[in-house]
Amino acid sequence: MANPTASSTPVAVLSDVSKLYGQGAGTVKALDHLNLIVYQGDYLAVMGASGSGKSTAMNILGCLDRPTSGSYRLNGVAVEDLDDDALANLRNQELGFVFQQFHLLPQATALENVMLPMIYAGVPAVQRREQAEQALERVGLSKQMGNRPNQLSGGQQQRVAIARAIINQPALLLADEPTGALDSRTTEDVLNLFDELHHQGITLVLVTHENDVSERADRMARFHDGQVVRDWSAELAATDIRSIKE
Image 1 (tube, rainbow, N blue to C red):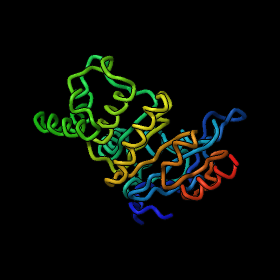
Image 2 (spheres, helix red, strand yellow; image 1 turned 90 degrees about the vertical axis):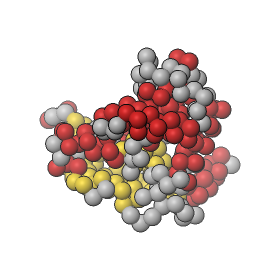
Image 3 (cartoon, rainbow, N blue to C red; image 1 turned 180 degrees about the vertical axis):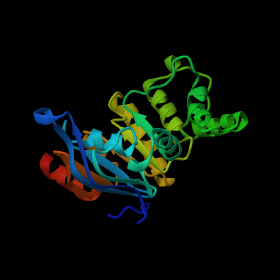
C-alpha cells in the first residue's frame, strides 16, 4: 500500500555515505556506501541489529555527525560543506529530535522546555509562548504546561519532548527508540500521537528494534553491516512478520 501522505519530493538524501571510526587495524566501518532517500511525508521505520549502522545513519541525518565520505543533502543543502555554525543553524531550523531519554531541563516547566529551541532561533518572547502553548495543546498537555518534568508521567514527558521537537516546524522529525523507556500502554499513546503528526504532514524517521512499533510506519528500511539491505512498505512487512509468527 502506497503512503497517501508521502510525495516524490526528497527531504533527506544520503548518497554513497560511509562512516569510519578509528584508524589502521582498529578502523570500524559503521556505514558502508549507504544510499537512502527520505521523501516528504514519509513515515519511515529504521530497523536492524545492534551495530548495523542505524544509529550512525540517524546521527548523520540529524546533522549530529558528518560522513567520512559520500554526500548528504537536507532540503537540497549539501550538509558536508557547512561549517559548525551553519550546521547548528540548519539543525535548529530543519530538524526535530525525540530520544528514548527525554532530555528535558529538570528545573524548567513543560512550557519553558518547549520554548527552548525558539530562543536559539531568535523568536520573540510573546511569539515563543504562544507557539509553545499551541504545541503542548497539540500533544494533549494543555493542563500540564506549568508542570516540571518530575511532576509528569513518562508518557507526558515524552509528549513534551515531541512538542519541543515540532515547535520550529521541522522538515524532518527524527525519533530514536522513542518508546524504549515506556510501558506498553504509554507506548500506544505516543505512537498514536506520531500517527496524528504524520497525517498532518510531518515527515518522520523512527529508529526501533520493536516489530510492533515499526508496523505503525508506512515504510521500513532494514540495516545490516552499514547498508540498507531491504526497503519495503509496512504492508508487506506486516505480512512477513505474520508468516514468521505462524
